[in-house]
Image (cartoon, rainbow, N blue to C red; front, side, top):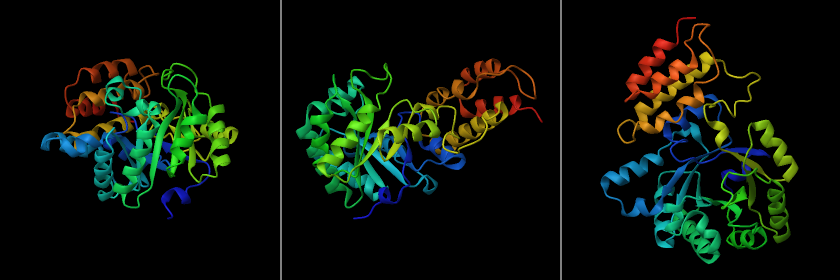
Length: 327
């Protein structure tokens, strides 16, 4: 069955799912100013989608809210229960997602404690069950996996064939082990190794490299070196919704401030009733840094300090309106 994965350019560039970062508001802004080839939502608990009370379910479903401008858009789920993964995948498929992804790489201890995320690298039999369950629930929507090269060591020779045996549409590979977190440079030679394993097994799954790419050009070079089908970019999106826009010049301070003002407005419009405003504050330093007062702007430091003291989006928008002086 053909899916959106088959029509992507090579290499393609995907925005990584980032908890409390690539939420519905930020993704909407990214899609407007520099859309990636594939957009991933924040990872979402399939268990919560099945068992949460009305308030909890409403909050979780906000993570699965998207706009058509983001397509193709992928919902990422996590669970250690095949039954709940199947039901969660069915919920995501019913919401019209183009793809469903299973998180098998998150190193967060609370996630691992429940048998999810990176813990699945130690339990390939369950990982395979989860893939089969997601496919049943997805009803034809392609299912992919995001994982790491291993838990304590490189385990690609044993781990990746287990995943490929279930015929996922794609495997996004963070080129570090779970124990390495993001404390060492990503080793893209292992992405190349994954491509070799995939080809030797005759699998049609796409291999997506992930880790340390700072720009689309950087990602393109890494893909060429590894021979993979695409790259997933993560932290490079902080304060830079233009990441995929292929600009020839860096955004000016004024452009950064205007983008942040729109980001805050979208947060208030889309998420203001369900999400703690504190998550918005992690974006302030990323947008507002690196300039002194002048050229119609107050200093980045002064603006940022004032923003960090705000208690609501309306306060932040007022500060930004005051800071962006007429040109």
